[in-house]
Length: 192
Image (cartoon, rainbow, N blue to C red; front, side, top):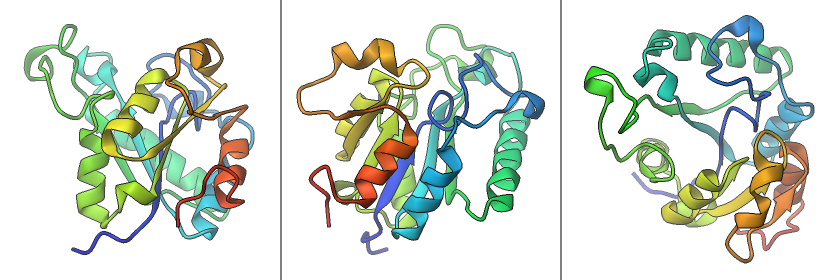
């Protein structure tokens, strides 16, 4: 498959939705203001939008993979009602120390490792060098760098507390909408 698609990879908790700590109940899901509009802008600009999220709550036994899938289905329904959507979801259920049974392992998919982005690139024909990673944690930035994407940190979720630890040159935005507007507006060394 030819890799010529551009994507914006999005962390989920603290980036798209409010950080709740091991979120899996749909009734507790709340968008961060502007997140649906950000996704719509990115899609309209021709980017694939891919969610990549560590979900160690599965590995810890707090909830199962079906609960993660149900939350993503809920997210799809909410976005569809607003005229947009996500092109793919990738999640890592593992934790090397706190995982239970088969979930306790060192894997290639847990951020800050780039496994989820590499798998998405293979599945969707994504050119990682023309793509972005948006998240609220240093691990999201590191993941983007390791995958060969341009990383952006946002101040929602945990982002405000992590902006002082960034590698030089990583831009920081107030929220996902500000980051998306900049990507679409070609304001951060846009990659064609």
